[in-house]
Image 1 (tube, rainbow, N blue to C red):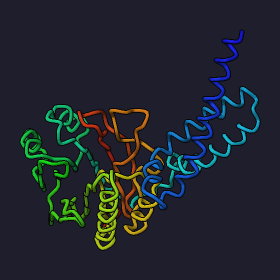
Image 2: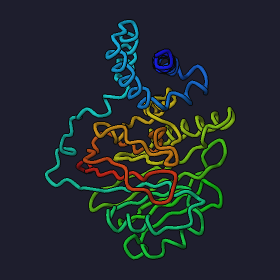
Image 3: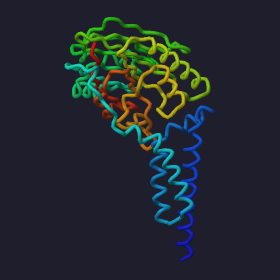
Image 4: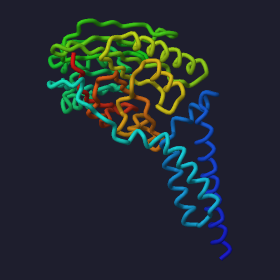
Length: 322
């Protein structure tokens, strides 16, 4: 009997500690602008929400009222930040057009150390996207994609041997293209204007530094600021897409949306985490597609594993009337 009581005490003690830590992290990370460590932990908002729900249910079963109150408050905070991503949004016919133009985009961080393009090529064949954006694209990867050239005759690429190569494939003619060196590290970002029938669509793709240390954190923020300013000067309709190394719950991400005047395409479709596949319970949404006013998002989802540590994202939109 004493042994059973000891195990029960240990179990309830772990539940108490878990709920307290969840509550502390949930509240502290709401002030992520105060320090980069707080931002680092702000990315796990979905995990905090799920944990707070499960822990609160456990304390309801135990009838520990004080902890139930803490749990409900923690649920409310996280729900405020997570649930809206799942709520349906109003999706009007693009520009009131009677002939909407559908476009499907596939974005993938293919992982520079991944040397097998088989699953990626199979995904392209299954989804038949109109536009493909790839990041961590190496010269070897470009060589592996010879088989898709016939379907995607228009290309813009800046392959590199590190993690910051980039490539763009299109079924549509490209009226203008540019590779720009983003501040402060000179990491390549691309901008292209695709001619889709009588309409034009501008696409920007960028891949900032992962914010591992303070210098990289600052470099990521400067690159996001510069790309947001570029986006604000770029004619609409516009799509910005890429591995941005940030989630929607970061203060810096909110700044990016505000400066670029774009909206995240995953609104109404869920959080859809994309990284890291090697640690499934900790996956967070760092691959993004943002669209300008008038572009109607009809689908946003993650694709299957392709040998990378990221899941690809697949986005379907209709363009506004020209």
